[in-house]
Length: 464
Ligand SMILES: Nc1ncnc2c1ncn2[C@@H]1O[C@H](COP(=O)(O)OP(=O)(O)OP(=O)(O)O)[C@@H](O)[C@H]1O
Ligand SMILES: [Zn+2]
Image (cartoon, rainbow, N blue to C red; front, side, top):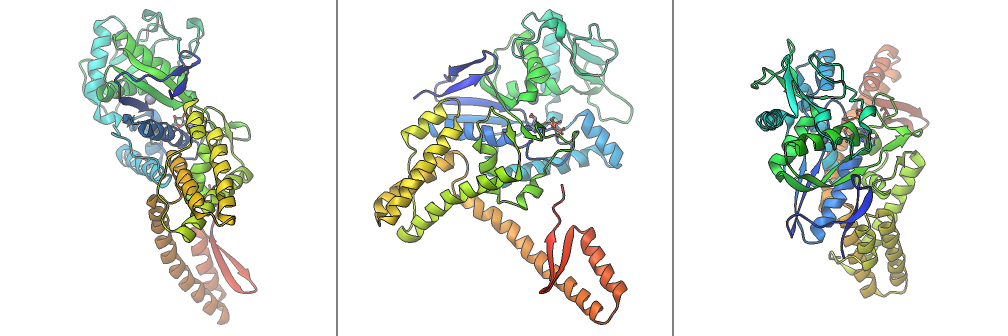
């Protein structure tokens, strides 16, 4: 059956026909590594990991590129405010994102290019745009001439008169609707040489240059969060197409994680960090929760919805484990036709999950009736289907992630217990100052101590 995908550019569900039979090329806009990831940031990683796994399951050789935006105004500003080098700052948060993707079982991309490593490709693209009369250099900046590209606005539906790039006014810009390809160097900021002077890349230029370098001038699918439709993806298209390239043939956008009806965002302060959520549920449960809604719909966060999803997942897991306990190893089987039809229909995960839960309930009936052959057959189907969604309960990845965390927790348990013994001894000796000091140190380290009739108990503070 043919996979059909909703393409933002044509505003329609279209059959997915790859450019090269048997292959699929996918570019996903990755993070601007300026701070700790929140659960909204990783939703696109999870949603398009399902796309990738489904393409692979259908036998395609998938080239999957997810970039890292590692030079940007926000990175420079935050590093300066913290008094740290910008390269240390961005590396720290690149690691935090990598860890979050890994914890959630997102497959590592085929390549993970950094913007700072692809200035050569950006200079080449700017040169082509200048040669074709679609870009101009002014005072060390390079701008894209929006009016020179009549198709501008096709992706987002913006009328040319309504275009506001949301950039600070640049020196030498001919028209306020033009956008920045390259920023002239400022004192104290990192910069790279170009024929137009030293400077650093604009955000939009990076992605066009990196997508084309790895995937070619035409490729299959470009993905990202829906806030990227304008201006980021509109500008990516303009840059590539004005230079004469075919660029992406399908545009996919995921909805937001919202909280209180608004996009989860650091600037609004309504964020939940990954470690915070992983203190409440396991990584596979968080992934199941983030992936359970259709990728294009909004996902309004609530503790209740998170726990409900986690319980739903545990029900599936319990069936697979129970069957394994009774019957031995469960192989990875194949998915059902209903599941395939659901995913082929623009990655209809909610329908696919309804199918999986339906199979689980049949499987449990088989277990109750002592029909182990049927139970094993169904458990193998459930494993295959959950595997496409990235949450196969028997995937060794989850044991590995849990092992890492539990080793650290066990070590913490020993250390905190020793501190609490010291505090109890101080209290017994009426040395209140020492007892308070121990407690304050634990609090400062994010450990909350509660005195109960059974003695002191501790937990990690549920911070942001
Ligand atoms: N709440 C969210 N839900 C889904 N995707 C999100 C959410 N917040 C950010 N993203 C996505 O994360 C990616 C990186 O975004 P970016 O680094 O620009 O963060 P941002 O949108 O400025 O968020 P914040 O204000 O929290 O830093 C983008 O693709 C964006 O669509
Ligand atoms: Zn991008």
